[in-house]
Length: 248
Image (cartoon, helix red, strand yellow):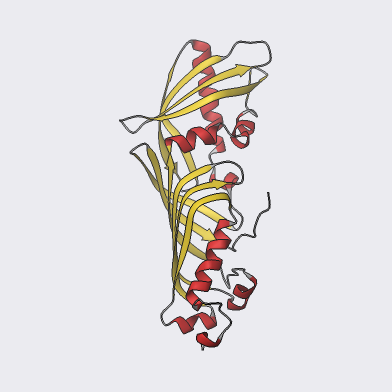
């Protein structure tokens, strides 16, 4: 039985929980807290690799591309794994599975993410009047009416002074696959408004979840809410395989 297997001072479900936690942690450069809890009743089901499911909760997560996540919750049901791979510190699914997810991004997380090289480089691919766009000091503000405000200094080319862009919009999930800025309003002079419109079109094109796909995991967003200076995403994750550990 499980008690005779080489688990060093821990039960089978504890061991599997530890390995699953490590597999998810491989997605991130840094984690404040990350813990998986495996459910199996009776525990002997683990010998066949059969799990009733597991819950995973993480806080203060930093992805390898510099994007930040305030909190992430993942709940899986009835998953089947290769139990032998656990002893090599790996989680191998016998077949793809799905999980319900809740992801929280704070105002600070979004501001930091918009200023990372990962996002800045994608935004700089926008051309306006034949010039590449450069954004600096981007700030994201959540308003009391649940709208989102984007403030940034935009420079076109090498010798032109920066334009201050001030954009307010709602944020919506579209076709489960995209996050879109909608009901957009712009402030400023004519040139700043025209540039802001081009920027929002570019950002909306970028916010396709397929372009931010995690290793082995495809995300779908069903709905989102803005409250208490946070954006909360609710959706599903299609997990084809668990990620391998990354090295910085």
